[in-house]
Length: 465
Image (cartoon, rainbow, N blue to C red; front, side, top):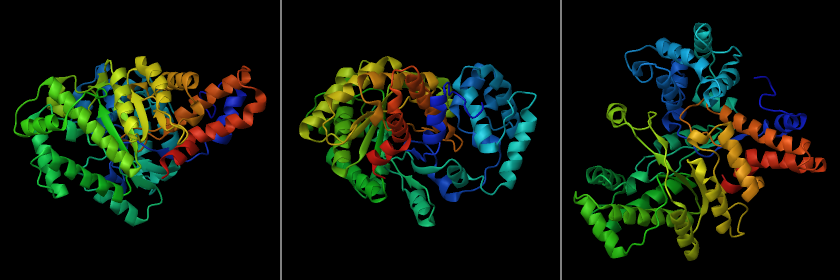
């Protein structure tokens, strides 16, 4: 992992070092905890910052035969957890975790040593010494270290956004912007859970929610509140796109039914989700926001572990949903009304790559370059092969030059090297094309600008932060 890691040609090296690497990071979708940024307290240890909440590493450790107590347990020490991760790393060869692990050690801690059982204690102690004695080794310090300009967190409509306000008022020089994630407001599969959420929404919005119209009023108030606090993006985690037909009377009746504690039929669930997804999209358009859709995950597959640990602990997988027609109907429904906002679509199943890439062109309207975007390789596709396939497909069926680039989608302050990983992969693709003669050598200045655009300027212009 020298300075030319993943760069196979001289042109790729030049593109990366001169044009990609200097660009600031706009991390427009992540799951960082705003309170941690606001409080900016030092980390306890490398284990806290590196293994806490990292379900990628937990999945690998479980696959390597490591007991759960060393992943998520409270009865094991930071050293014991780190030691088990170090034992796992040599078995991650050809998994992106191997590259990410060593990129993070190198860029954050200056450690070039390969992590394995024989080096674990040395690296553990060196990292902890750096954390304890370097005053810049805090959430804010790490964001500065990686040349971050803007991050967008992921926030529920009931969130107070108090930590975002505290960050702004502190004068912190990196923008930390909330993003609206209203998934729970359309999660009507469980009436009790839905009602509990609606009651919380009523409390924070000041609306006495008794009807569907009240629900819409409360959500609009919270949407306006988010806008007043700098929000410019929404995000939706959905299994598939919903575009079933529905009527106002039918939605009113469905709300009354689920709010009253009665389970809905599958058809009623789909109708309600279709209505809510359209409602949210129209709110976003009216506010000038960008809407994001992450679709295709089957979550919480292991019910035993879900009961033990809860969601987002490493038991999700790629789903297989035939959602192309629904995606088209959903986008067309909005476009026909003139209510289609800037949109980013992320698919989790790589079998949908060509579907998404060709769907974009149906709804580009010439108002802005790349109005409908295909998001970078997401989650299980957030690695060299997944990113390469996404960029190759976008190149063949759309305009790679207008792509808004990479994001971390991470809960860790050490995940920014994923932008470096992406940038190296991008530069290698384009550098190979130049040296193979597939892009004329005289176009190299245009290619260099293309790299800078994808790494930074496209996102800067698209989101208008």
